Length: 97
Image 1 (cartoon, one colour):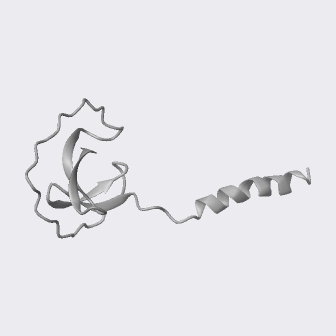
Image 2 (cartoon, rainbow, N blue to C red; image 1 turned 180 degrees about the vertical axis):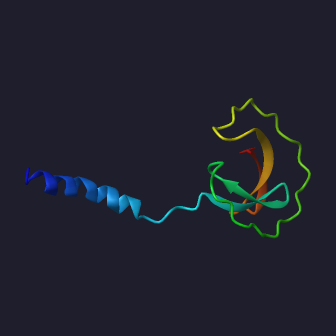
Image 3 (spheres, rainbow, N blue to C red; image 1 turned 90 degrees about the vertical axis):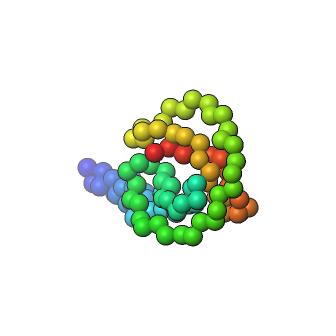
């Protein structure tokens, strides 16, 4: 029985280390169709205030979208123009809400 406590301590150490790691930001403020909006990884993520100046969206034909089943917790998915931060240009991407 004396060996059980140290073994449980060793098994619990990695869990304790993982539980105290800082959380990754799952939402980011992005320019979508010329408006600053929070784009989140999951529907239940905290959405902070998003203020950003977005450039004008040039006219572009909406691409033909293949049917997409929205992830759990999302209502629908559609093609929207999202600014690529590296190229500073809008790109068509599938965005789910």
